[in-house]
Figure 1: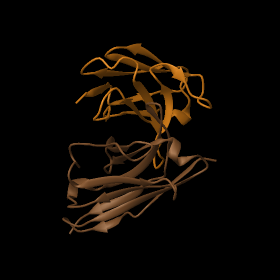
Figure 2: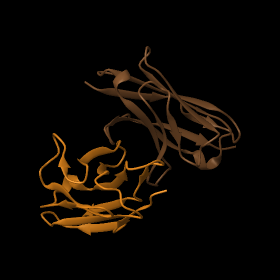
Figure 3: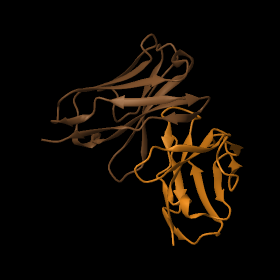
Figure 4: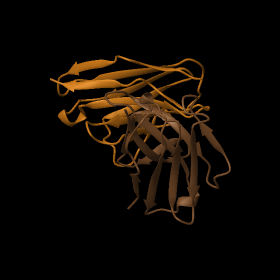
Length: 117
Length: 107
């Protein structure tokens, strides 16, 4: 069974840093491109970042470029998001999503990040 | 950036009704358009891939159509369990974008 489990969310003050993790199981992690997608409370889905199978290619939404860094450890079957200089508008549930071709076929349950003083 | 605009934002519908949700892209995206359903307090789930291709396990009442810039998700014979938010998603180019969502309420 394919499983994606996010962790690392919590309450953080503006300007602070957090590292999110996504532990996967049930499939060959190195064979899939991965993404982070977020959803602010009561709002829609917003794509945040993409990473290639090898980890050599990354893309970011303009809203997080220069502050967030996506990475992966294929040996550990894990995806990461280092989030620095956090702002109130980064408050959201963060999902990791497996990419199959162009669409996202599996999603984690999400981890809530709250940026507030 | 490719902007996806869905309509309507909200619709209240009765069971067995046919529902149509549209998604318009700000530029041509070919067939790189996918649809997701998100029920309250759940993660999104893919319904339709590449405009009209079905997903294993998704009921056949869900279908998609369109090309270029105009796309449609159709739900035939709506059921109570279809109460959810629906999102279109383009994978044609980065940055990846989603439509703003359409919330369906079942009367």
